[in-house]
Length: 246
Ligand code: ZN
Image (tube, rainbow, N blue to C red; front, side):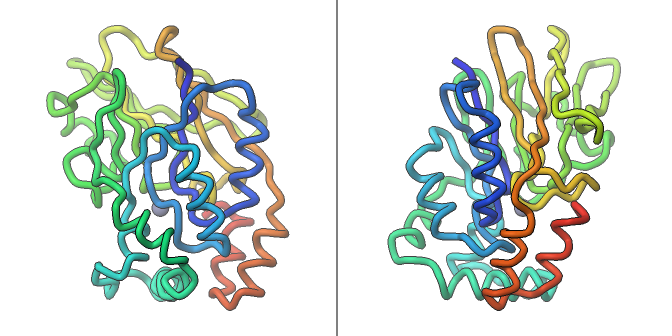
């Protein structure tokens, strides 16, 4: 079994399309680490696609917020505006799908899936120190997570924690083989709103047989995604930040 690992699509249909074209024929099953919606202009199309194709998925904080059950006072103004906009656009079926998404972590076949941290879906794992604290608490040798929109993750072993970087700007792919003595925290990066300085859509492929993660970056039709955001009445800043990857 080969897996396509997606996270933080954030209603960016053009980015999702580019990722799927790029990953074509390289996977058997799809895993999604949450945040299908929020920020972008295509919440319904994104949800319908994920609903029909993802085999394993956990909810993200923006999926939860879009159902209207969360207090979004702590969201920044643009995120809050996008949440209210998304709430107003969701079809009844898609709202119900988001409401029923499971909270992470969720066990897959030899891996687990979380949105933020496996200990708390809203926690960010960004620093090696934060990752190291999870050593001994991870239920699986491979954990996929998102939330930070930073591609990479960490290899944890008794002797220390090794950060995994992102695909270099000059390349499209970076391979990491998970050593036998290590537990891996793998962030595929954000499909629809990267924040690691690289505006290309991010994702990962996982081959358990080879214990191999292939991180990838792919260009997408940024201008169309930005135009939809601006024309839909979402805050302009959500369009501009896509070109910065921040
Ligand atoms: Zn997110």
